[in-house]
Image 1 (cartoon, rainbow over the protein chains, first blue to last red):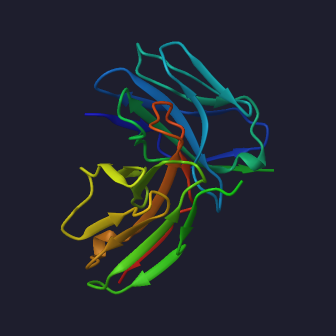
Image 2 (cartoon, each protein chain N blue to C red):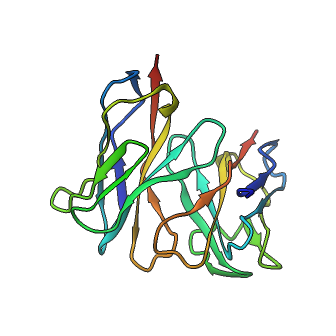
Amino acid sequence: GNSVTQMEGPVTLSEEAFLTINCTYTATGYPSLFWYVQYPGEGLQLLLKATKADDKGSNKGFEATYRKETTSFHLEKGSVQVSDSAVYFCALQVFASYGKLTFGQGTILTVHP
Amino acid sequence: EAGVVQSPRYKIIEKKQPVAFWCNPISGHNTLYWYLQNLGQGPELLIRYENEEAVDDSQLPKDRFSAERLKGVDSTLKIQPAELGDSAVYLCASSLGDTNTGELFFGEGSRLTVL
């Protein structure tokens, strides 16, 4: 079956620190990979995605590279801000599963000034 | 443009009582999803609608859960009777068409507590 494993949290950083949230996956077939973010009081929203091996998704200073050989899609940001405090979910979708996303358990990020 | 709207945001009921959640998707989005999010876990798909048709309800526990989307716009998810284990957040999402892009638009969720 399909599954996504995220590093255990919560993660607490100081402003301007480097962020890495690890994500690994198992999938039947060739998945597309996603990071969703949930800010306090808001719904989940798509942060970035990658649809094939070696693709790099990027948005708002966040990046993640689709690594097929290590089945990973780690999220990184060079300098976090207080406004990045949120819950981050790694997810996958196999082809033709039409919106059926398999999510990791989520990682809570708190950034202090 | 309004996002996905869900109500109620919070609901507390006693076990064996019924409960219903309502969702209004983004205007023009013909695909609607209900996801279940247990505490400390990621969301899991319960049901997917294309217009008014439930095209994937394989994960919906049909003994106590039901859903409808009568006019292909808003949708209701019902639990009857509720059990303690149903305490969770119920998320509604929508997308434009049958998506293989993975971009779903989520509402804020309805948090259910069963006592």
